[in-house]
Image 1: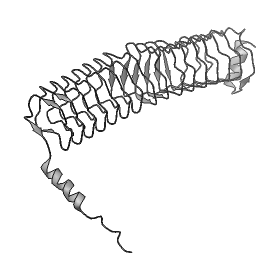
Image 2 (image 1 turned 90 degrees about the vertical axis):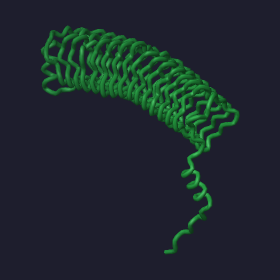
Image 3 (image 1 turned 90 degrees about the horizontal axis):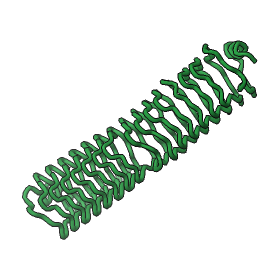
Length: 357
């Protein structure tokens, strides 16, 4: 087959099935819209070609070069892309599913609305990529290189990122679901308006990170470091931060309802207007913390360290304060009198019977 014959078959809408195309040397040109099924293109140089809206189904593409090619709207399904070089500069709406891309590189590529589903991306390089509105779902990501990547509005679903290379990442609006980042070092990075709900981040280092409006609802952050992190309006509802170190954390107007802060150190933290209702703070340290208008209603502060903390209308309604340590209780509200009266009235009220039909 010649390059001209190949192009004619592509433009005629003819699927290319079970072909060995490795001997072809394709000159620059328009090869867009091709359908390749179980074809062998291993080691081929496809650099600079127009391959938009192409389909590659169960093809052998190991060691191929796609640098500078146009791959918008292209689909790769069940292909071997190991060691492939896909540094195309930019790609939009490209989709990979059930592919093996071990050791491949897409470094420096702008990927918009591109999706990777159930792919093997171990040791795959996305270094310095800009990713927006796409995602990685159920992919194997051991050793994946995301250094210097900028991700905005992407989805990371069921991923193990414990061994991923994440130096210098910049995330905005990234949604992580059932993702494990335990032990990762993410200090001084920007991770704003992201969601880490129900994710594993035990032992993660977020010191100095910018976490504004990010959500860690139900996440595991046991032994994590958030020293000097900035998390205004952050959500830590029902998160487990036992034994975490959060010295000087800046988290005004943050939400911690139902969180576990047992043994955590939040000394010097700014928790102005923070909501910590029903949180577990036994033996937690809030020494020199800013707690103006904070709400610890129903929280367990047994043996907590509140020395030199700053209070102003700080609510401790029905909180457990046994053996808590104080320098001064000035500015605290032990109980909300109207709420206490309402609770007593509600407790005394007989249960209303079901109305008769």
